[in-house]
Length: 231
Image 1 (tube, rainbow, N blue to C red):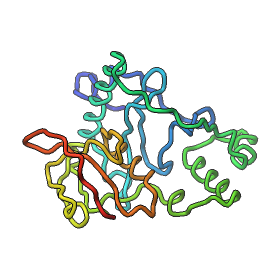
Image 2 (image 1 turned 30 degrees about the horizontal axis):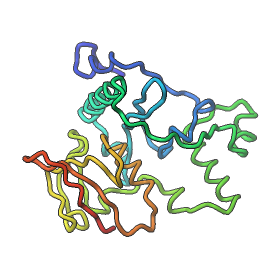
Image 3 (image 1 turned 135 degrees about the vertical axis):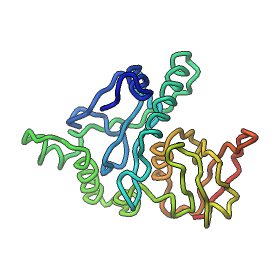
């Protein structure tokens, strides 16, 4: 990262052990799941690979609509707060998904790994889709069109502030959400960043008619979890 060590981001980054993945061949892609066509994506994790949060995401308009340096610094602060909870033993542990390694994806193993080629992120998504299609299990809307657009349900975020709502319209407005609300959970899962929110939204069945979320509403600071948005 090109952040000065004496800047806020520099001071935050010095509290992390940073790793850049340049080849996906040894990664458990079952755990580290995301839309593999994102331009940039970070996981903040514990030493035992518990995912604290995700940072990244895109929409139909641009690969970086929801990315900026302020929201990245916010994600770093929240990652450190999650790590403090993990260190204290107060962070609930999420079940680990079934392990999936690139070598387990037959076409990827035969066409890329066996030829000593670099396994890149987009290849994982592409070859998984091939495997699903060959098995007759490919749901094109669910498996191939990831990163569903939040604006479709009327949610517009204040990007530098993470999950703060800038404005609402359509379904989100009809559900009672307001500008200034901060989204804190989606479909029963805690979300700390746009990456978290989009990941959970992506897991929603495409034919679902409703999605549920909870917000912290200012100025009271109370959590209201009774919002159901009709898609």
